Image 1 (spheres, rainbow, N blue to C red):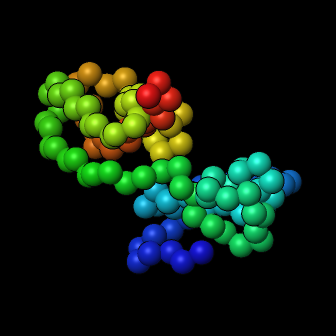
Image 2 (cartoon, rainbow, N blue to C red; image 1 turned 45 degrees about the vertical axis):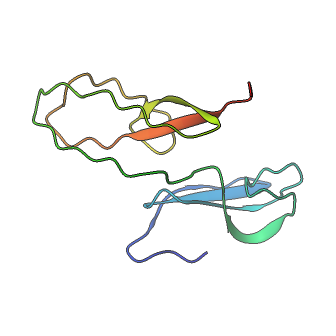
Length: 119
């Protein structure tokens, strides 16, 4: 698993059949049993070495600077074939953004899309 310059492993999940890591650049790698596509790399081939998961896609980096207590503007990015589900405060998408105004610390938000199967 080649890491990029200044990229480090931030989270690791070890399981009986497959394991995964998340990096500081938002990349995910997995290895182990892949009989049902569990590794998320568009394959059903099991592997004993980490392969990059294809679930996360870098679309764009949208940055704005806001002062404390400033209202956070709505920004809804578009991704063809997907529906924007919302903003989250972590890459595991377990902490939805509930800030309406800028808190007294820096905020980094991550967008989450779900596949639009209606088309």
